[in-house]
Length: 218
Image 1 (cartoon, rainbow, N blue to C red):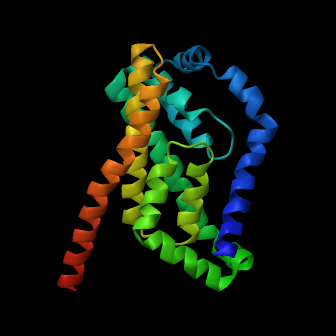
Image 2 (cartoon, rainbow, N blue to C red; image 1 turned 30 degrees about the vertical axis):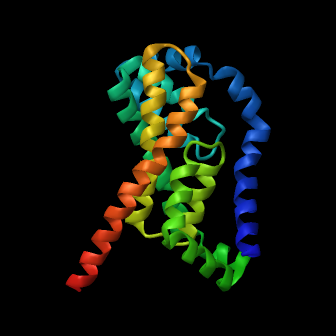
């Protein structure tokens, strides 16, 4: 478990480095007004820039919640949330896929086969789903957890379900706030942190039932 924690720290450090280098500068430029202006400059392709910014958040310290709010202001709460969800999901799936395809040898080198087996046990169980779902509303953790899920070969369906459980409430809440043109930090925190566990409980139960049915058919 110590080696698994070491892997987490290494991934977190890799994500933190761009924040330390460019984070303050990007944050000062990414107000809701400037983000909306940049998107509107793309005309009918504003949605594509929004998705691209959320995807780039994997590598650079983009303020994802500001992008989601801007999408809500431009497209309204429903369509804005849908576009934001596409961006958030594609970013999470990219991190998972790259880590799963390219990172196993590096993970074994860092934590050894035993450490990687511990990670696989963690992310194949319910705990892995909780980690993915709850990490989506926290800074830095979404990218790290998605990478660890990929390295640990978390079952794809379980990862996607947990990603939806965490991303959907966040996109809905911030797109709604953007569409209203106001800020409600307390309710934002309550809704974006409280809804993912409820959604994951439902999806986790459905996945378990599906797995049992498939096992029975086999």
